[in-house]
Length: 587
Image (cartoon, rainbow, N blue to C red; front, top):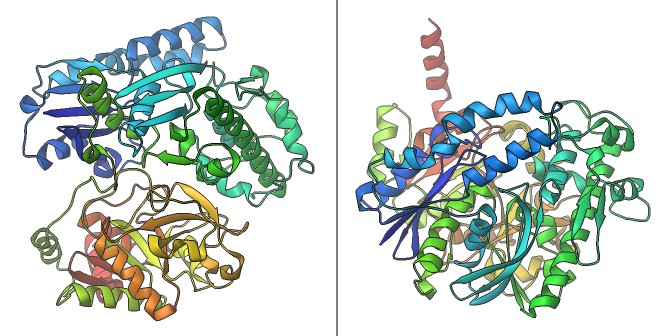
């Protein structure tokens, strides 16, 4: 039985395919179109999913969409009428896409040659299903939080075997996700794209509630009850009737106008980011404590965009009564295509959950064979060498990293979700004090305050990181920030954030043999089996998908070499050809 899940038209459009309850393929549309956070109908992602199993839409048994468009449209109409005439401009700009696209999902799906049932699942139910139904837990408490679905912005409930029951919700316009996005906009970053920058910036601010004056100011904006439920004072916001998110009242409260992009990030901005992070953590902790009290469950799963806040995620087991936590590798809207497919299979169709249905890795995207890679290299006239065997590939890659080379790593199936996890990664030496600056300026072209993540083999993690057990269950997907033990701060400076933490990925041999062995081989050379792992892309672009994407990225950055399949491509060997090609084109 094949079930296809679809998410689109808000941000991070995606498709996912189940075969007899097992996730066999999943990808986000942006990877194919090269348009970051592409919202469009995910035709390319759907095509990949079907092609991976050699099937057509006519062989798909059920299709699901990750929310109920008419319910969402009803909410939008209601809020625009309520806020009229303030909302007129945004109403006029929003209506064409709803009239021509968003209300016609069923028609778009039928055009692909599908004649069966199309299921529409509520937005937060899809988040909950994505989090719980592929988790390692038979029973778990569930918490989802994001900007907004149809009406819900936060939900809580329980999962029991194949059943999900949402017990409560907080409704729009009150939203932790939109609070975080509003301050993201105020700080001069892009909404739905740069909230993680604010999270990273927070560590440079004052994280003490007693001394950070902006914490008390933001407490005027959000009222958090003992059980974690909250309300926002809407005079500080405009998102419910305008494109602009912070109001003039918010700017007055925070002592100045919205920061313009590319201007200096002052200490005031860092302290505001810190205050926001403190508020988010306070609300999430209160909700989780209350959820634990109500359910008496020891396990919890999180979903929705707020579950990408890895700084908070690493504190859950320390600050709440829960004993185990699991977060889907793609917890925001992009991951909901898996959620709706799972909900159809298990809850609507009543199929039993089995161990093989668990999501133990995120390698669900396209892969390229040795022949396909070589055909690309030869067709482009690219200079390359070929490794004799896997042992040479592992040893050579580890040595290049040890020699402070920046290595583009392109192997196997592309990752599902926003994190590079060892298939489309840039790898570098964490012991090199210059590596962070080099990567930020010459490769990623991004802000200096952005940290880089460490990857370590699961069996070595507890030596270097003050992290929770069991491993690698909670650190598979680079969604948890943990303290790095103090004795290692100076030895791995390029993955040690300003607060002494790192957004940790652990890897096991079973999950990704080649990646694991490269880390081990580097450890034999450096005596520290840790690498910098950052996503294989540059600022403003999606993670690379194809050999062409990877080569183009290397040649346009400070990446020294590309280990792609069994091939080694050095930038220095191809720079003259690149120069000749560019100048021939101009002539």
